[in-house]
Image 1 (tube, rainbow, N blue to C red):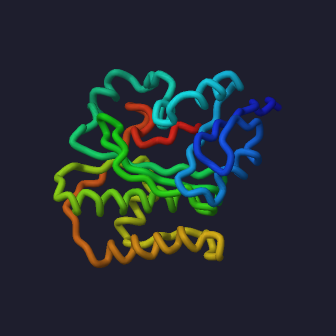
Image 2: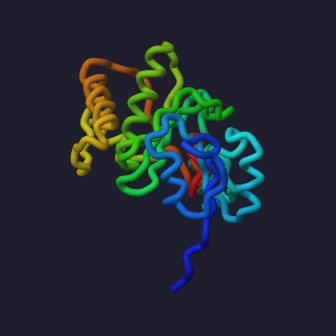
Length: 213
């Protein structure tokens, strides 16, 4: 059995900032802290260097991506449509600390972000991000399309529901308050925005990815 690689966690914004060598220590700093900023690194040196740098230089960054698809498959898929925004969510645990955001697909400029919330799931975050994106584009009268890498979120939006198995409790009340608002928005609003599945195998991680994998 392969040994799990150790990670180090940089917290830029939290109850305490610094580098922590366990997830539990990191989680204690970001739990119930609105707008917490954190990311994992493979080495202490990388985490320490990041702490002395800007969080925005690290969020959403990926290793150089090289597609494993054939040239024929890549040609068929084509390139992303940059007249678009991209949304994504991150959840540390299932359920666990969850947040979501939306960015401009080409520049990766952040357009909105919510969380972190004490208890949520990745599917709920993806759903909320997608509805938030639809509302954002409608509010700004934009003809951009919206990318998501979640088929589940696309299905829930089509059905105007959030079919999560997570049970409501006091801890996740803020998340379910947003879920209720999102469902209400879907029932009360129409939109012309095209929702498109992000082709991860061809293009790499979606631009809104939090880069914490």
